[in-house]
Length: 244
Ligand code: BV8
Image (cartoon, rainbow, N blue to C red; front, side, top):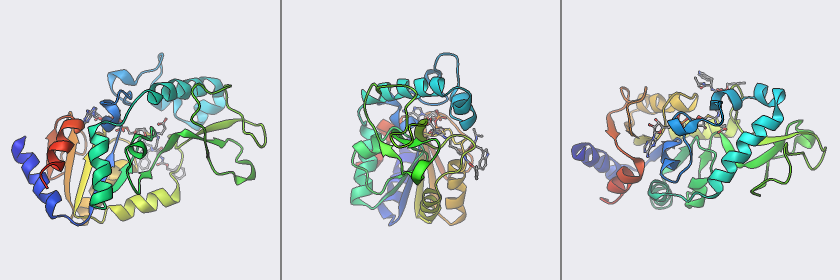
């Protein structure tokens, strides 16, 4: 492990363009349930069954109860050392940070230029897209009523996140693809199964980036990266960050 950390740390030290892709694993130490870990279950449902427009049409109340439960859990969580190191790299090294997470803990840690590829659990938008309304922030816990209503058309409102089967926002895809033109691409705390985010490491590699993965366990990305470090992000990132 030490050799791998020394290798990645040296690459980071000499890099001018650093890109970091994060998943639920960077928030695990903060107490936020991951998607596919044992703690990812809610009642008897898996996220893929609820994080879809079809599930929302079928039962908006159930989907909103799941998001309200997650919002309540996340509200009590603080950024951890992984978020803090990544935020410092964004400020001090201009590192670009692409996250799949919707918990906004990277923002609260002070990350600059964050690309929230899957949106934010703290933002809400009109299901009917009335007046083309941009998502609005509502961080109240608990929410006053479920399902949430749009303040303009009084129709259904939805969490402003990207569900399975929905397209990511064009500007986020563009920013993420642009960020794969880098010297070092780190993929941290993600099971690397959700696309298009999971395809970014291959894009970076194809452009000559040095690629590394930090995860507790092997993932489909492990065989593609130059170095795979198996350990908790909240320990590994400070170990990498402290040597420049
Ligand atoms: C789209 C928001 C097209 C909601 C989420 C190929 C190309 C394009 C699409 C597809 C494709 N193949 C399949 C698809 C469809 C689909 C997809 O990828 N499905 C998968 C399941 C096969 N993709 C989509 O639907 C995407 N849309 O491509 O649209 C399109 C184009 C035009 C028009 C219409 C459509 C949209 C995907 C976004 C889905 N939304 N979230 C919400 O949060 O409620 S995804 C969800 O999964 C979360 O965002 C989460 O972040 C993300 C990925 O999960 P992870 O972050 O990796 O979390 P997970 O629990 O899985 O893993 C945690 C990892 O951390 C583990 O590996 C664990 O070992 C590790 N870990 C734990 N603790 C630690 C740790 N590591 C380090 N330290 C620790 N302490």
